[in-house]
Length: 378
Image (cartoon, rainbow, N blue to C red; front, side, top):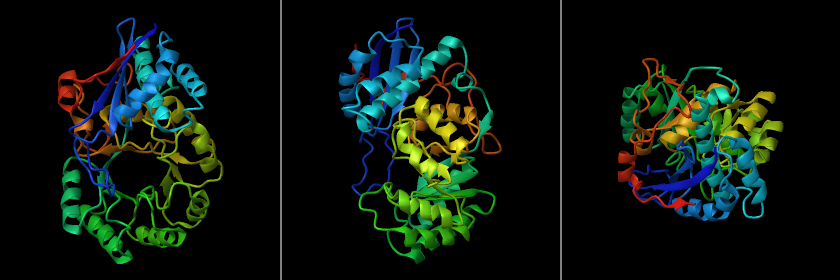
């Protein structure tokens, strides 16, 4: 079975606010779907956490290497792409595009074998997992309302991130966390994401250490990105001292970049994003390396239904997987598939056991988010 073409589908019109200082527009293109079409008629879906223009540019580079390749050897094919483009890749947009292609190729292989991707990755350690609703911090009243809405959707874990947390005073940070705990009670897990990868992050180890102590008073499940993503020494010291688990790694690409964070125990929870770090193939290797170093893995997933489907397959196949991120509410998560994801009565997501990723894209729905403008690469 050979690769015949790749469709690139930029998503616009439903982009969720990411909390960045430069503002947000729904028509901003931050996510791009790719479809790998085979000569047998099977089509695999992938997702890239980057703009369509960058994916298209990467495809100009990658297509001569991809044309006619096997559609059922995702790990070998995407490693070939990575190795052959190191002078223009080694992270960034090229790796983001490879990530989507890798996810799509795993989807194809699962369909061809009549098996869920998780079984092809080695087998299922679980058949369901707890998703956490992922939202932004807000002013106390608005935050309280938003949290109650997320709980009403059935979530039993919620992560709050970025503005205005860490941008005003310590007292205001505690007010936000106290408000959140009072809003959801003790029966809902809460996580805090400081957003230390934001440009010109002003805080260092002392702020992060004191904030972690405050978060412990409110039974916060983990403290995410409290420092800039290049401050590995700060993370090592913070993880050693913090009373709550420290999480990070969403900005890293390629398995090699994760090694020092795992080997030096810079975090308690590693957070690879398979829509930009190299795909399912790289995340699987990162996950097993985390297992070998006794570090938990929670996939970063500020993305799409395709990205969530990939995260679910990974979570099934990795013993160290804990939770999946579920951006909510988000049209790209909830409006792109024939059958939307459904939480059960315990706030868990069943992991699809149908062939491939276990989802089917609804191309009619895609049209309202830019899916009618699909450039194809031959």
